[in-house]
Length: 281
Image (tube, rainbow, N blue to C red):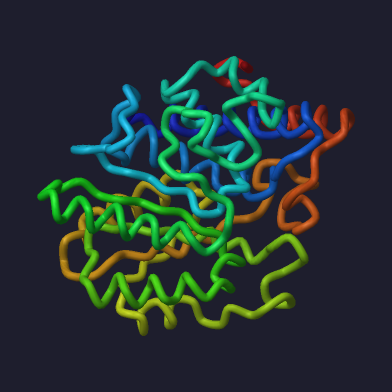
């Protein structure tokens, strides 16, 4: 945990370096969304979450986090390692055979910090609701957080879960949508328009906030505000506006970097834009 905004920003630079290096070394993975969500993950794990790096699967007495859009695993693995769940040297095994840091998070490898396998889009909100209800049944006052892609909202299960959560007053749940406007096949507006997301989530009975996801100060402000709105009868949804590929100029805003790996020259160009602040793995 840190209260120092400059330390959080420095960590975010290092996490972005980890992301591009991990995806480059195996020539596979999803750098775009990972880079865009780095501020959120650093703020969450180093400032917001009440969590224990001595990992226990049941998470009793802790805040829990579920990553629904599991393809952005590089950013999660980097933050888990740098917050102390496992050694940063393990990041060098990303997507390799028998590695615990596979392309999509999984539980079979027993990687600390991972509670469900994810990446099958649309399912993570249901899992987070189940965990939140379990905490209520156990009189555990901790919170449950989840993250989703905006393209993921094209899955029908999301809206079934949205109705269920509001109807059952799952008010210990704070979910976030990475609203970067891009998905693997192009802009979300061209693939399948999502319409007015704020109006939709409010109509489904959620308390809706918006934040600038590539502005660390605003990320912290809105996450703290979301925590203050918990336990008031409604689940909370944050619309997090980010740029895919944030931090690397030639990746920013383009769906082409959703699932493409940089070559040697592109890696060097990316790293030149990202200050090494803590030390590479």
